[in-house]
Length: 85
Image 1 (tube, helix red, strand yellow):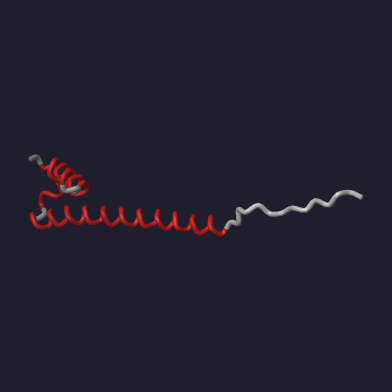
Image 2 (cartoon, helix red, strand yellow; image 1 turned 120 degrees about the horizontal axis):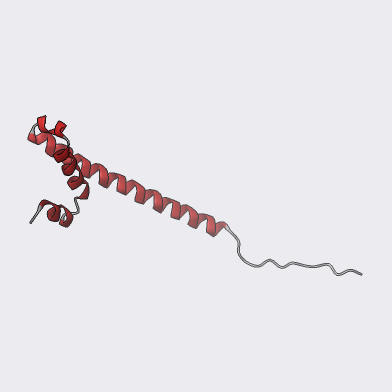
């Protein structure tokens, strides 16, 4: 299997993107192997944490909207119309 296939199967999309960045950018060449692996793992962790934050924010907004909808009284009100005498 190729690296792309493995990262797709393991759902490590951010790690693969960070790897591509390391391969393109020569600044990473000087770093020790362990540091480069650490950066790859940190990129994946940051991606997943950010994704979780976005999901939780969306859930909170949905919950908030649900609370607002429950506060609305949608029952029809009896309206008395005064007839002219």
